[in-house]
Length: 245
Image 1 (cartoon, helix red, strand yellow):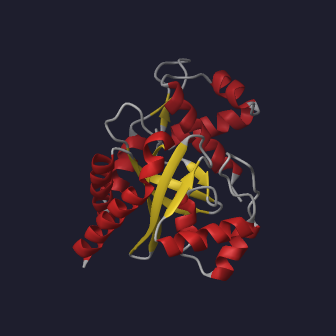
Image 2 (cartoon, rainbow, N blue to C red):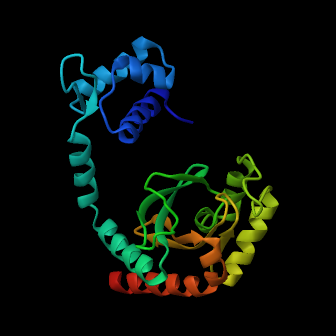
Image 3 (spheres, rainbow, N blue to C red):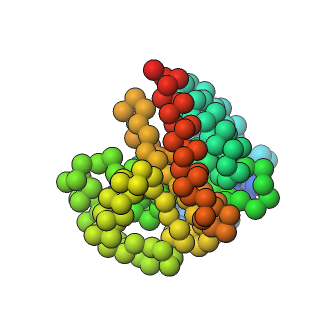
């Protein structure tokens, strides 16, 4: 369940982030197909709160630096985030693949921290990306931390789609994969939600915050290395846990 007004306001910010230049009321309205009055109400509210401004009279709207300052204050105040970012940087450097922290968000796993390697061919992801929680290594690592009853309810609420050739298309299939992965000691996905992508994940709980640490990359490079990367992941998580002890 989402709140339409909040969803629309966030969509406006993402629109400007992709556009990279001011836009008029008409341009925003045309892009989203919203009523003119609703579009104006969103933009004027953001202007009133200091999150949007008009660079010149009739020159369109553009977000202010208040978004950046607010986000920087939030991230800077989180001591856990600094430790996780350092771990992700080390993972990306050692594995040569993209390292990700994902957290549960309803029916999705949400990427909250992403660090990409220096290699030119890599999995390009960004913070805020949502992936169906059953359809990847990170999501299933998150689901594994639920009780059996909680997981059963969560899986029953999902709409199953054949995203890729490796996609799991039923609650039973997801449950079986979670069981096999738990016995193996790590979670993986191959050709599943993203074509030609492989991923390895392990669950992590810090101060009651449930998350998954994931390494993802092209299946041509990572597919045969899943076990090796899982061991690297486990070592970094153990080092992080020892540092908090």
